[in-house]
Amino acid sequence: LDMCKANESAQVDQTTLEVQRKAKIAQAPEFYWDELTEEPHATRRKLIVAAHPEIKSLFGHCPLTKWKVLASVLIQLISIHLLQDASWQTWLFCCYTLSGAINHMMTLAMHELSHNLGAKKQIHNRWLGFFANLPMGIPASASFKRYHMEHHRYQGEDVLDVDIPTSSEGKIFTNTPMKVLWCFLQPAFYSLRPMFVNPKDPGYWEKVNYAVQITFDAIIWYFYGFKGLGYLVFGTLLGMGVHPVAGHFIAEHYVMNKGQETYSYYGPLNWLCFNVGYHNEHHDFPFIAGTNLPKVRAIAPEFYDDLPHYHSWSKVILDYIVDPEVGPFARMKRVTVSDQEKDELKKSGGLVQ
Image: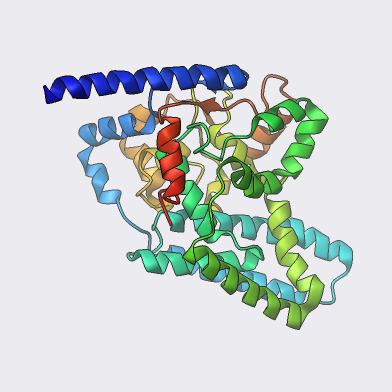
C-alpha cells in the first residue's frame, strides 16, 4: 500500500513538473530546455568512480591555496604603494592588466574556498575567503558561496541557478555591439542578477563579510585615497568584463555545441585561475581541489577527451560577440524542482546560510 502511494505521489510530482515546465518554456522559449532530467555531472561522477576508484585519493583540500592567496593580496598592496605617484595612463594600464588579473584570480580563490578546498575546517575556509576578498574592494565572498552551492546542486534549474541570464538580457543584448556592452557590464549582471531572480536576506556571515571589507577599504582610503581604493575596485570591475581571464564566465556553460551544457578549457590561464577551466572535471568532482583537476582528466581520459573543449578564453569571448547564434539565451535550463519546493527552499534561506 505504501509503495502504491509512493508511486502515485511520484506520478503526481512528474505531472506537476511537466505542467510547470511547459509554462516556463512558453514564457522563454529562446533558451535551450532540457527534458525532465537532472544535470549530467552526477551520472558521470558515478561512472568514473566505478571505473577508476583510485580517483578518490584526489578528494580534499589543497594546502597551497592559502599561500597563493597571501601572495596575491601582498602583490596588490605593494602595487597600491608603488603606483601612488604614477601617471593616470600607467595607473589605468595596471588596473586592467595587473589588478584585473589578480582580482579575478581572487574571485576564483573565493570559488575554491566556497567548496572548502583551501583548508580542512569550514570556518578556516570562510575566513580565508574574506581575506581573498579584501583586494577586490567589494564584499562578495559570503554571498557568492550561498548562490554558488545552488548553482552546483541545481545546475540549469530555472530560478535557482542565477548564473543563467534573464530573459530581459536575452531580448536586449541581441547583436554584436550590444553583446560587447553586455560583456563590459558582466560584473553588474553577475552581482545584481541574483537579487532580482532569487533574492536572499543577508545572513550572519554576509554581515561579517561586509564589516571586514568596509574596514579594509576605509584603511586603504585613509592611507592611499581614491587612487588606492580605485585601483582595487576598478581592477575587479575591469577584470570581470572584457578581459582574457573573464572568458571563463562564457566558456563554462554557454551552449556553443548543441546538447552540451558544460565545457572545459585546457589553456595556460588555468595557472592563474586555480584550474577552473577544467570545468567538466570540477562539476563532476566539486570536492577535488583545482590543483588536482588535471589529474582527474589524466585518470579518466575516456570520459573527457572526446568532449568539445576550449584552448583560448579570448577566442570564446570573440566567438560569443560575433556569432549571431550565441547570446544570453544560449544556456540550458531545466525544471526538476517544483515551484512549491523552490518556495520552501527560499523560505529556509537556501542551501547555505
